[in-house]
Length: 506
Image (cartoon, rainbow, N blue to C red; front, side):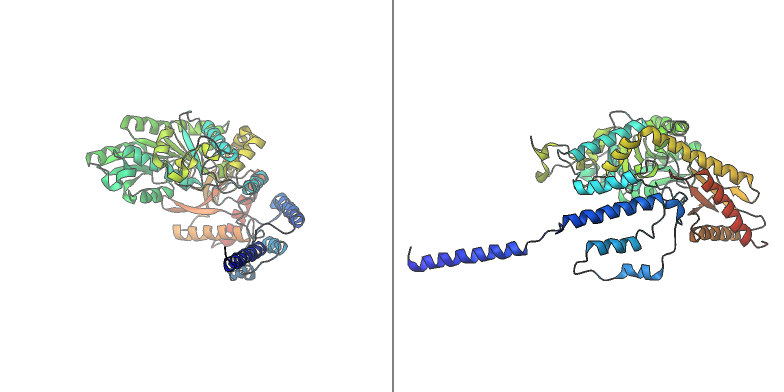
């Protein structure tokens, strides 16, 4: 090698060394420079969180957000860093001070769980553990599988059933109805598409079914018209005779009746369809039975009220929500399919980059075969920790407690001369209206909406409203382990007080 070549080689070596040194100086990480300071801040954050939950009852359920706080969420994208302590201070003053309110014992607007400290801690630990539950041989996957098995046991479905944890009830129902469509289509829908289905499918649900079912049928390519709404009886349950007649009519018209969507707790009133009769009908007519149990499926573990959901375990597919009556922090839903192989057939794929291996991390089960998600969070941990801490029996007693509280509220309403029950109370939802008499429906609705809004703005209670048989009603959905009978006594007292002050002759 000549002198010139040697000098060039030395130069290249020098440049490489300089580049490596510069890269070493420039490489960054999101880990803190001072772990001890992060530990101090984390300890303060946990203390704040404990005080937040311990003092819920003393705070308003909900409060109007001041304009300056609202404006703080419209600031530009931060380009540079802010010390973590300052970030946490801002969080405390804005986000933590103005929650939705569903953890509060007098939040009854929508059917939402009220969370728990253990569940929140589990979400933190899941984030630290950091696993992706698309699959693989690691502990988080085994916990996910165990939780699904526990939920299957809680609702009484057989060992042949399989399921998966998802974001919530809408996703769980979508997956259940996807499996139903594929099973009843008569072709390989995954391969040939919905356009190749030889006979148009019909799905049936009561006119009280949750709106997510319409979205599901639209997403499945069947369209809203494929969902036939069946009238309900006086208890807001699907009318079996009307359903039977609709099935016969559709079959005669050339459609294929495919699936009945039963409600184990309807969204408006908590009504429970006759699941035994629907299971018998579906068996006789060769239909798929999907049960939307996001409100009431877990009543199956309630010792006093379990008979209300008799027949639940006969479902071909079932959706439920652990973030409701298991009080897991948002969000976690579950879908169970009686024939677990059909669930896998609906979603399983085997791309070359996810092939199983005989050993190592790729030797475990691939949970992405059970849903559209490849990336999956460790949402099972909060359910697992809460069931380990409290046991299923305690959750069953709390469900009975909420249903008993709803019965107490219904009795208070029924006994008051200016309050009216708008629907029978079955589970934990009570629909009512303040009605002093002498008001038409428009005026009565305006009065009740104003009562609802004043209860919210006063921080006393948060209700929602709905329409039943064309008439407005206030809706109280009790899904809170912190609610007491005295809270419901206060609610009735305040509704009457505000209503009496607002009524035209008051």
